[in-house]
Image (cartoon, rainbow, N blue to C red; front, top):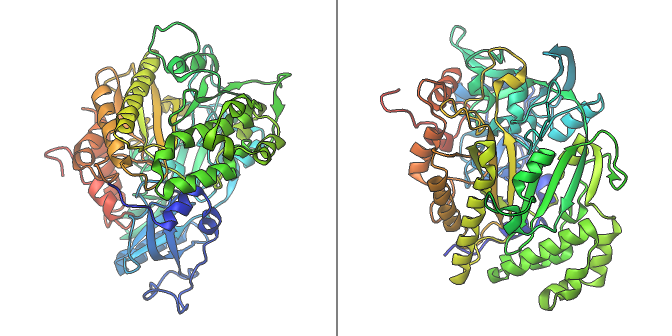
Length: 609
């Protein structure tokens, strides 16, 4: 059985530690509290300081590590030259809103020769280039800029993107490194305007600038790669194995969206197998609107379904919004949720069904104002949903039908939301098979959850998130000869051109939940059996949890050495091996890397170097 979470894990899970996570103090090199000697001989203008690294869910936490913040892109190759000579490694760091150990591994000691490079202080410039690509404008953005700032800048010029990750506190560099995405496929009859695409943000890149090794000069330099260069495909989604300083993105005219939330469709209807009666399946809503997300709280019967539709003018019933983060009941943890989560992480894991029902009720009240289920509830649920709580939930107004500019509807996760851990997978398939895949996943998830519950185990206390996107089709860039992002979970399969869609699946739970890793392993293995490369194929979502053993994520040796690399290989086409070779060529000294990446990217086809 998993060990009880520490108090720090509990605080992270509740979100109560959010302020400390954001504002944690730093230690200068001369501080009496600093651990070990500061790195010596850094390039001029860089002063190191120490800071604990902690990721989004608090699962990856280190001793205080040395950090510096370059004031300009030119300092990055200078830092790489210093690191090569001094025997240190550099890890680009943004807002730490991730789960997997791509930046640093948990427990990295202060004695490790690891220098975190904070991009968020100075590498944040955003500016339109004045140039266009295939009839669409472009924007140059440094990789430390937040997605919130990028989208706000674009909106100020009437521009936007089709889809993006929901949190605003992500750096552009971080989103590119892991192939960050939103949810969007073409609705029936929808033709994307110039500058818009349905894949990851990486596929919008026209050119990129990275710090790379120059063999002729025997030093690291900044070099710009355009999208037609073969190596650009390796650098677009590179897991932190390279350091990008800025990119040029192709964007398009912004469009207003209408976001409608529903909680009235049962899961067995929304996730029904193809051919079931009715027209309220997940695939039906995608055909109608092109953009959908289902949030299905554990042990509940009705998911929260959100759909977005391009809607130029405000519908009469919709509420106008002009800024992001429009679900206050989700952005700021209500006291009943915090109280019950506190009981869970204190060991009362059997309250998971009540916790799921509480989250659903609060969502339903915040969206629709419907108190019927509250009035019918009893026991612990009724005691938690007091009059004061209900008044507070209703004070902000109802949120089931919103309309406004795209950024106001696409970004809806704040750092103050509940901090959970998550696994993540992308299922590649034909659009026509999407409902089949949804139903297969939902049936297996419910079967496993019931099996565990019958043994008195409750591994899941968060939600399932289900979304869909198009793939990273290079033609969407408008650039003839554009290279696909080789390590992107959304890179198309040349041997399966009929696969045009990705179904994204995530299961969320509080960190430290007993039997969670075993549950995730059981689910992962079931997904691999179902989506085995015949009718559909599976890839991992780099930023989340994968390669599970019974006790840990990112640990199954067969997944790491064979399954994951093979999912990105296609005979006769560039893929995993070509990407790893290119990354090694541009950083032969492995300055940009860590032990986890060293092991993961060591997997090569038999007979290759």
